[in-house]
Length: 246
Image 1 (cartoon, rainbow, N blue to C red):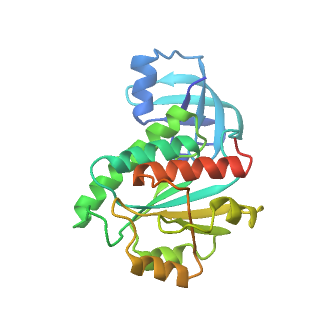
Image 2 (image 1 turned 90 degrees about the vertical axis):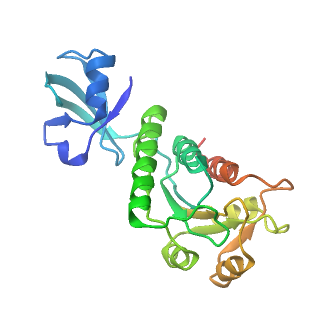
């Protein structure tokens, strides 16, 4: 059964309203009728089985039949701090990692990032597009949540932001000793996990020194150097496997 999304404020005790782009899709593409059953998610991990009760011009009203925790969400929360890449690579990163089960993606303003968010208007425009990509990917993959796209952060802000995570690490092309498998095995009960991926040009050595000084470990992902748009999805896949989420 296809899954659709609505804002949490549209959900009442026994009814909910779909007033997003999903409403038009349900009416014009799927030709939904009064009495049809569909699954609607609140974007925060709860799925609702509902029956369509009224089809309006801009919204669809439904009666709630049942509600349950989404069974498509992993038991680990993974946050990616992604060095801002060129062109449409960020779109790809958000799409694929949403499909894989990531919880949050934070753009990282690193020294070697080619892309610069010069002003608030440009930042807001990108953020709006990125969040739409996350929503579309969550629908396509049957997610129970829509991953949050966080505000861009510097290295110093990231270091402060990850203090309460159970496991934090940095895949780094110059690391050849510490393996991801080893640090995962050292944290078998980790629930909140964060990792940082550099941009196309990699990390500046000063950034790595700051991260290490903060106690954040660097790891190797193997003998081959992965592209920035490949690295994150490789890591998320490894984490899902390591924590028995696949």
